[in-house]
Length: 118
Image (cartoon, rainbow, N blue to C red; front, side):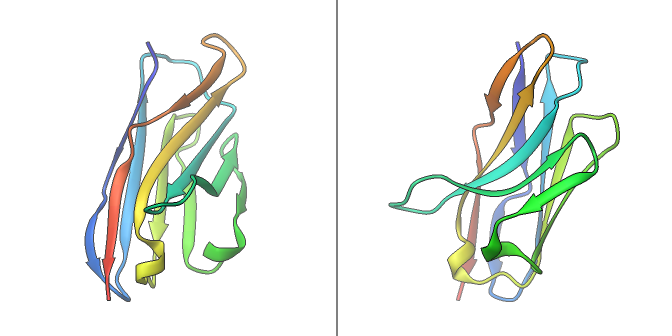
């Protein structure tokens, strides 16, 4: 069974940085795409960044210049480097992976909490 596990969240002061990680277990098949989503308190989950294969990345406007997504080549390991954080970036961050080969489907992690204190 495919499982995604995020790590690296925590409490950080405004202006600080965090690096989130996501690892996939339960399959040796490479995900077609992986992404990060965020859910702030009282709001819907929203897309943050995604990367197709290992090198085609896209970013939501609100994180451009602050966040960087990276994926180990040929690995189902995803990172999110978050810099210059402010309280607006607080929330639960979820890892997502899409597989086009068995195990076909969309998978989510349980999330890791990021809290930025002002």
